[in-house]
Image (cartoon, rainbow, N blue to C red; front, side, top):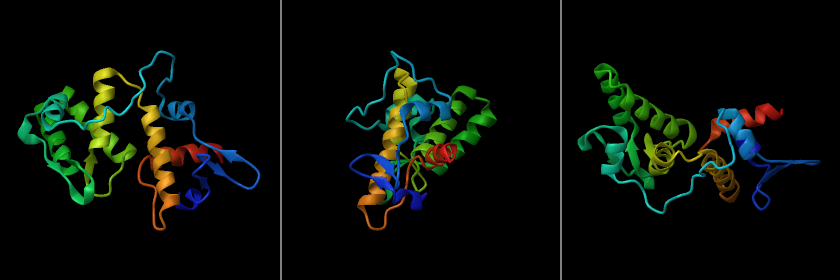
Length: 176
């Protein structure tokens, strides 16, 4: 994927090869995730504020003391280990609604908005919150994260693709 990243054209936001250009689209990502991208769907947009600890606890259906907020290396979020422990607790208690929300948040934090610091970033929590509360379509946020990761790779000397790597991997293999 890092090799593929060198073909990313920052100004055109597409992969540029010798004789063609290609870029992921909202429709392709929607098809990969099996999420319909229909008319009238609410599109996710950043609300200009990060979720509060109280809001996260309410959204996940857990007490406030169960949320462990950390900020290693400028990545602010919830400690992934604490969410995994919560998941086990919810499974034992058979609290399936909370279990499902925590599992979904972990998937957002591990698969879509990957952080190498063992943290589910507040960006992932923000998208998850918009999807949970407003039924917003997450595909534009996932595609934007892909574009931002690819741009970071090409604007830094030692960058690497951070977020949405599994999606980009599936997308490129579909085209190969």
